[in-house]
Image (cartoon, rainbow, N blue to C red; front, side):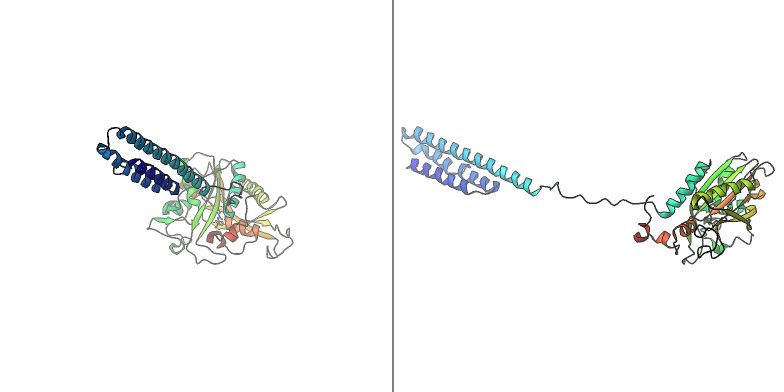
Length: 345
Ligand code: 2U9
C-alpha cells in the first residue's frame, strides 16, 4: 500500500518537475513534495503503525524517493538557471559591427580665431597677453586715461554704470592702465589686451552693446612713432596679406598724442577702388597714437624718460571685413549655421 503510494508520489513529482518553467515554480514543487508538511514526511511519520519487518523496507524506499526527487529538482534548477543566463546574454547582446555615433567636433568661434591670430603675431614680437576685469572702476576706465570727470567725451549715457564708481568697461584700456601702474615706473611694458567691452547702444547690423577689443601698449625708453608704424605694418601684412600698404591719418583720442587712424590698402581691389573700400582704395582698420604724457604720469611713469605707443582695434570689424560678414549681431546670437562655416584652420 505505502510502497505504491511512494512510487506514485515519485512519478507525480517527476512529472511536476518536468512541466516546471521557472525557478519560482520549481521552488513551489520543492516545498510541495519535500517540505515539512509534504507527503513523504507524512509517510515517514506514519511508519510507527507499520509491521516491524515492513519499516526498514518502507523507510529505505521513502529515503530513495526523497533523494531522487531532490536530485531531479537540482538538475532542473541547473537547467533553468542556465536558461536564465542564456536569456540574459541574449537580451544584452550588443552588435559590435554596428557603426558608432559620429562625434560632433566643435570649432573655435570666429572671433576667438581672429583674436588668437592677432595674439600669436604680437607674442612673436615680444608682447605678453594681459587680461582683466569686465566690471571696472571709474578711475581705471576713464580718469587714468586722461578723461577726468568733466571730460566731454565721457558721457554717462554711453556706459553701463553699476554704481557711481563701478561700470562695465567700455574699452580694454583700463587693463593697460592697471599694468602700467603695477610696473611702478619701470619699463619696458609690452602688452596686448584682448577682451569683451560694453557700451549702451541700440543693436543693429553695425552697432552692438557688447563687442570685443584688442588693444596694445608698448612703453619703454626711446619708443617713437616710427616704431608704431613698423609694428602696425607687420600687423597689416600678417592679417591682410604681404602686399598690403598702410597709411596713417591724424585723429584724436584723449589718451594718445599725437593720435592716428590707420588704413590699409584694399585687399579686394589692391587699391584701385571697389565696393569693399567704397571706391577709395583704403580701408580703416584701427586707431593708435603715442601714449599721452598725462597717462604715463598718472600711472607712475616719468614722461621725460619714457615714451610709448598704443593702438586699439575691433576684432568684429576685422572679421567682418575679412569674411564679408554684414551683420555684427552674428557674433553673439550664436546661430549654429553661422558658426559652423568657420572651421578650425
Ligand atoms: C593706455 C594708453 C593708451 C588705446 C588706444 C585706440 C587708439 C583706438 C578704438 C579703435 C576701434 C577701439 O575697437 S575700437 O572701438 N581704439 O582707436 N585705442 S589708442 O590707447 C591707450 C590705452 C591705454 C594706458
